[in-house]
Image 1: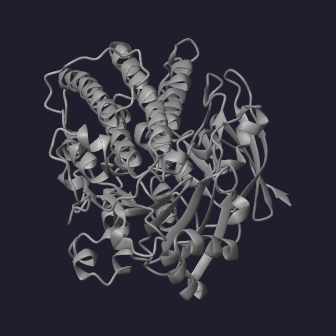
Image 2 (image 1 turned 180 degrees about the vertical axis):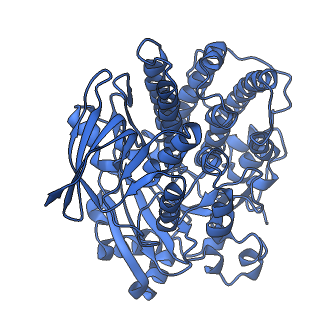
Image 3 (image 1 turned 60 degrees about the vertical axis):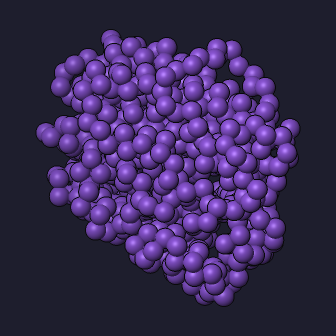
Length: 559
């Protein structure tokens, strides 16, 4: 092998997947004169459809791609706009999709999000990096990474096309995915107590829940412009859920995610086992996949996919982003959100350092490490110990709406309105952030208590999230351009709104909630925000008596 001349860069990114390529583009946008190189093991162009999972976005990640990185043209023309999240609950033998409890909208949410063909997306990002003067070395196998302290450059040795390359870097960003190069080298591994696993396939076919019934009123109820298949569709049961994501290449991504205690990965860790498992739990989907088995393009599985990291940023000029650091759970598709958060913190530190603003004698590095962990841990509360709720028709729909509203009120507001790297905002709203954290902690515990004390009862019908004003108004509010004063006022109102809804849920459940948060009566017109959810999911007997509106004798609400 021949040695090549060593090169020096301001930033070298280890890994050219979604996290690494977007970090490179964000660094280029914020540091136009910086020298940047990306090292990626895979050979580009990568294949479409069968490249990687993580194909659905929600508001924070979508905003990051669309607005922060200016990728709107690609997203609108080459990917699939997402008709929100849609969930179908177990009903009997699950042999009739039109007789199941459904949570989802008939219209696109006000704030846009997208379904990504990861292969197509990463090929585009690689080309865009090259166009913007970023060196993109694919087919590169990293052999050695020497991490130094202070102002001493880091050193990377990698192999490409039988040649050895030596790079020096002022900054190293680890975006190596589950390989976790810096995490392993610097002993930053940390256990995660969320125990769930996943297996998936991609099939070269547009799998449409719209076609799973002969009832034309149900199948065409959304109209040709808003078909259900354009949502991120979920099939829910006790201890598990299944995703169905359409890809722009024409394929469909389908995966099982399950709590290890309820459904161990050994039950579905091959294509044959996966199809047999689906035959028992979701026979309609199994029938379609078995009839088109020759179109299955790949299979993958991960046991206990959640991971944590001791720190992501250092005054020694290294950073860790994407799955190389943290990953919690694919439900609600938060993976791209955490890429957006980690990349934005990393880019801010890199920019400050390259501009000569010292990072070693400021609080930003420890603050960013702490803030990321707070966002991660608060998101983790949504999932940990909660897979038992997924088959509960009364509790889970209420939880879903609560989770959305908390997300839009906290993470969505902070990131989309450009406050993530504003220490003053976090100090100013310390009380409100603590209150929202306490509200969510106590509510997630209450959901589990509610589930344990009130066994689920199967109901059918549609909870049309497009018709619930508190959902659409809160989502639409993310589009507002706010001054600092308006942002502060909105944040305070969000806390008041969530407190009001907190007590509304507690009262409806009929079960005493364990909390130290005092009950307050705010003037906000949010009482009854969950009424449409309560109407469809109401159980018989005492739960109906607790409803302010006239009880619904027939729980089925037509579209």
